[in-house]
Image (tube, rainbow, N blue to C red; front, side, top):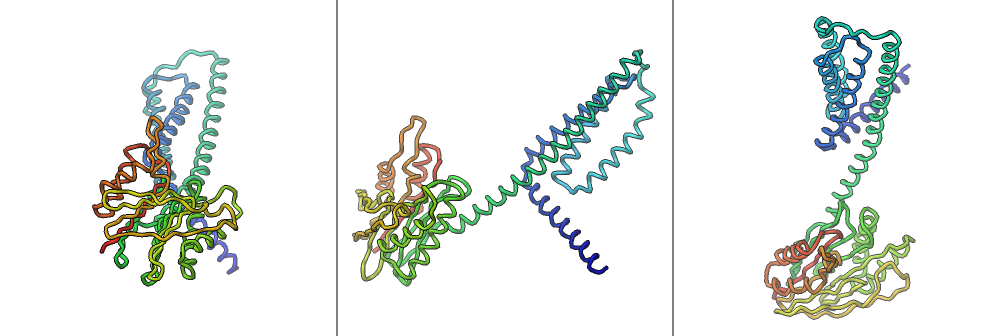
Length: 392
């Protein structure tokens, strides 16, 4: 007996929890969509109200409009309540509609026009046709609402998960503004959707640091998942190895082990240690831009992207930097921006912005570069930027 009671209580609690989850999902529906859905219910139930009068021999324009309009409003209100309020409200509104209809029925009948003279055969056919039409419309309404409920739950559940993934992405790829010794850093990433495949990161191990930008192939959730793996692997790898070439080799082994076709990543990184000084390495990534005074130099590629060949070698190069120099590591989402005429922005335009604005604060340089890309064409790919300046 006690177990049965507990089982019923558990079932009731599960039902309440499911209803709360469904309510939370439907609360995300935009107001404009609720208006469209209520409009659909108004027209559908309004037509049912209009057809229901076909079998009546005493019909007037006023009665036709009142009944059709009231039925439509009833359907629209029920739909709005179903989306925005508790289902218990539907019971209350339905009861109110029944009471109101019963109260108005004598008045409508009293002021109805004289009955029309129609043969019994015609009247019988109209009654059958109207009842069948009403029945089919009601079934269609119920099936439509059930379809919307099922697909709406699935769609908005997926939308909620995507929004959560976007929040996780923002936590994984935050804007970076830091100083480590005589070096200043600014980095940010703008995904083209809720989840992006670009990564900017800065790792500091007691004055030995690594700053890098990675760009995972593809878009959306799949590239975002791999991006998170790249960040985790890099964070773990730097505990044992900070030399850029060997670090990239380790990341390459991780990506190659995934066995996912057409999945790879490009990476551009700069590392510093008191013993080795500055070193940089590029794995299939756009060149690093080095701004010195009013000149911008491109530091080119040396290695294949990571995740292509498991035995690919990776090299790093010593990097010379003077006080006031600015390094910029970007992803191709900034250079591969096309205008209405199909012309690509290109890395030269980014270099020119860096040349002109290189003496400004790093966040202002970044804003100028992103603005230049936005002015040229739409943002269709993830766009990321890492700036490093040596101060004294």
